[in-house]
Image (cartoon, rainbow, N blue to C red; front, top):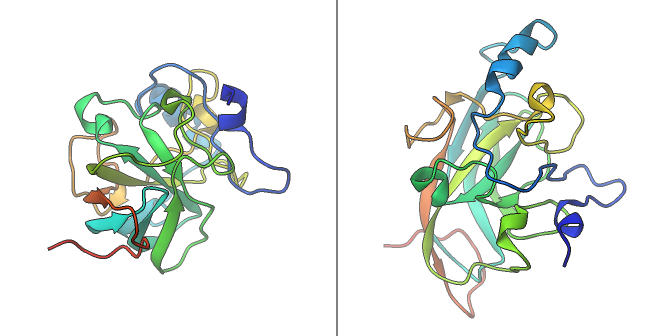
Length: 200
């Protein structure tokens, strides 16, 4: 499967991962994003998101976010633990949700390694999680209001959908200071529906 297929979005789909190969952390281009504030000013209220990501069992094809409450339009990205260990925001994306309008949502399913919603080409042709591991859920604002997920790249810093920075912050060591997030241990099983069930 080609890199183009990883990044494609079907016509009419509201979500797509728009990124390029190479290791690009959350922080790349954020200075340019800040300089664009006069064009697209962000209020404190719109930049708030609450998220709860519980330990769970999954077949490896998706995970569930227990609670998501964005105050502005946005997405949920799911990252491998290399987001923390390598401070790499782009190459660690293994799942992207659809677009959510402001509101309260529960038991949200996010597909992993899905061509339609997008994931990093660094994962090759992987189709599912292959082993137990911790994952990180990070809400992102639809900052340019185009209904598609646009990650920070060197080419599009002023149009990228950067993380919410007000709200739940379980980890304080993400590439973007103050990025809203939660993490969970995820156990891969062969014959269990993914219901977001907490592990004891």
